Image (tube, rainbow, N blue to C red; front, side, top):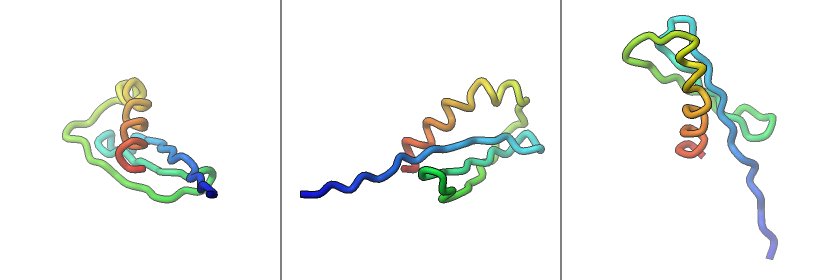
Length: 65
């Protein structure tokens, strides 16, 4: 029996210039497989975004795989 291994999905999150939109790019290996945008109810600073960025990426890796 041969098993097929699916590469892990990685997510990179970016805060857009309007400070209210987050761009989430999903990758399988080196290949970008999708880009999504999520609007925030209030603008946030780059500093605040950086403190929650890794948690955000991890959550999207888990829910969007």
